[in-house]
Amino acid sequence: MKSFSESYKKAGVDVTAGYKAVELMKAHVARTMTDSVLTGLGGFGGLFELDLTGIPKPVLVSGTDGVGTKLKLAFLQEKHDTVGIDCVAMCVNDIICCGAKPLFFLDYVAVGKNVPEKVAQIVSGVAEGCVQSGCALVGGETAEMPGFYPVDEYDLAGFSVGVVDKDKILDNSTQKAGDVLIALPSSGVHSNGFSLVRKVFNIEKADLSTYVDSLGATLGETLLTPTKIYVKPMLSLFEKVTVKSVAHITGGGFYENIPRSLKKGLSAKIKRADVKVLPIFDLIARTGNIPERDMFNTFNMGVGMIACVAKEDADLALSTLKAAGEDAYILGELVEGEEGVILE
Image (spheres, rainbow, N blue to C red):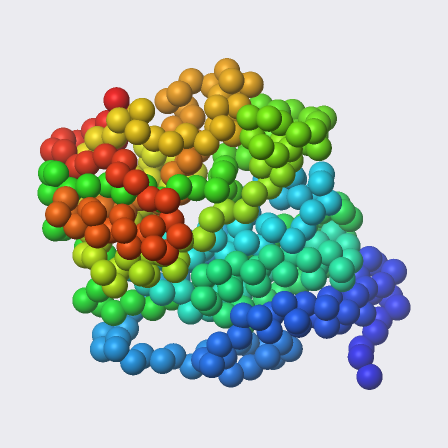
């Protein structure tokens, strides 16, 4: 017999809704299971057996993040099955920058009111993100917090752990002038800069459902497009090419993220005309009258991830990524200097 508290329900917390949410999400979670997962949902912790075959000096790599105010777009459109992909992506895309393979993921969903069907939709997106990145959803938490969140809103955060052999951790110490930067296109705004996006479009009052020719979709659909997950293409690249560094282009855009991946004394030289900017960014800049420098310092501008390789490895890197489904292209090169990013 399941526990039940009438007093707790009167305070706004329905524990039976929590039980139903777990039942509804089980099928989604099952999609992510791997042979290393030793427990199902319901325990106090998720058990994961490490397979260290071929990893003589294992190093665990962790990452955590949320979806941010992009969730407002999900609330306004009452579409909750994609933001979980964003949550996973923001964690595993960081982990891959170290050269690590994500192993497992946990999510945390805090709701104003537990509507089991909505929670299950959220978790379905988390599960899809885990499938795309090859990691297992080993557990999570759903917290009903009446009076803290509005009844129709929620927050979503996640945490992931990966593993890499110590000798294969990406090392930018071998970078030198002339190395090539390879761009992996983004799927859109991803999950950063949405406070500015919401201000530009006055999102609470915006028409999100009208088709926009330049976008090839509605504004709402375009903005809610989930963050691309780069794990599998990058793991393929690591097998074929010596990658010197990887930069995940998130909040802070080019100017903050690219320098984080560079050896001291080197800068990234990029031709502005070579950046394949997505139409949504042109629309944001035009609508908000935002200077180009601010755009490149806030958004990914159509480039979700950048890999640095030796010039002689560039062709193999491009062909490997394209074989993995990425329309990758050469974005620029490394030059001597302390500027960080030179965008000409």
